[in-house]
Picture 1 (cartoon, one colour):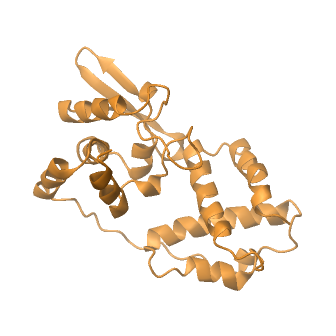
Picture 2 (tube, one colour):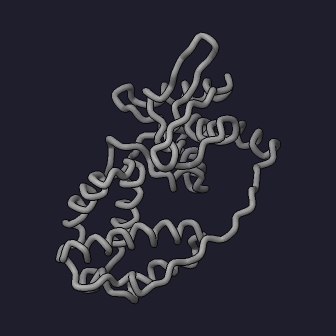
Length: 222
């Protein structure tokens, strides 16, 4: 079985199941990244290989849980549709979600980050700090989400479970969003368009907040 060739069918199934486009992209990203790292002579459904991938010591617990969920949804689909005889991930118990403690970023740190960041990163920081958006919500902002009103700008935010809410933007946030849109081709709808395999899509939520994104932007000036 060519696992990579099966991905378009699987993503179509996810969309037919009313998964949000952000979720579909994230699940496919995790599975494709896993498959691209499997040597040609190795069975991608080998349990030990999957466990080794998920045991990446560089990952945080949240990253590991998200990747495991994506792989589990994928292997469950392969099993239920008769493409494989058994689901290897059914043998791996789910990891308990740790109790998280809020860790607000201090205002001086935010101010320093804004002063030293590119237009792109500044928009991300402002949407998080002043509008309260999560990473997935920041990644998926589009031009049609911005509402210009007489009293100021607002943003339609699409959160988890397809829930929508309207968030008023502070003048600083509205300015940061406008500057970032000005740096993006008017033919693209996304505030943060993808530069990878999906040129017509927005970046993955995992890209928002990664240290690497700041380093790249600071050196390229983009």
